[in-house]
Length: 340
Image (cartoon, rainbow, N blue to C red; front, side):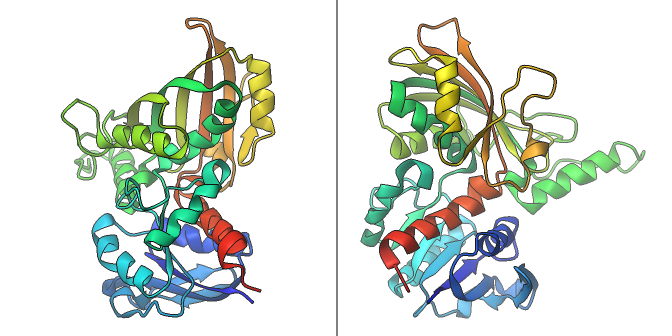
């Protein structure tokens, strides 16, 4: 016996990936509903070898449905997620709306799957920010071994993190660079993204950080350990898909780079590709379409007593969003709902 799954925002980049991953991982599904706004009504989306027509979210009755994967903005989620949850359908939400709610678990299955039991307070589970999700998969096994004191992370985040509009802007600006008179002014981003990097994701806060940077701090504390100190600089780069992060970690005790490499190799969700030669590392282009979070460039930091550096890369539409949501659904199905 399978589950009745609704994918909310099925026509967007993340929603389409959710459908792809449900099919790829052979999630036990009896019925799938592809939901979107009325303007997308009837749009066709793929689910394995099937084609689904989108239904109107505003008219959909969630009663009798087991799990809803939400991939819409916070404003629409605020309207529809409580309705789904009240109808008895467990919501797994990809927006930022519920991440910092103490009554809503924020889950990365490789890191804190046991926290999922807290879902019953609101019938809602939150998916973390894309940049946080891949980082904490790497941090947790190292933290378990040597206890992390402080993290300094710089991110290199692809334009797909801004949705289809971000992808289109990079594409149009890149084409416009080669055609005189067809230059494209920035609309999604505050500055040109083609052939450029922008140290600004989300809004600025009073302390000079951006909200994206604040999210990484707050979410790491909630998912891994509130005692970890973290500072982040989040940068948008002209890459279509795949986020990369340069991570510097300070531990309570010494952790040798070789031992760290072995720990990461044996940890769930991670793949270590770390050869000290040309091309012996993973880049965003290499990770697209893969489930794993890749770790490269593992090395001691000799400037502090107990420090390590590493390079972390993942497909942000997958582990950073859709894959993590489906993995949460798998934990929910295996541990709590248990049909069949």
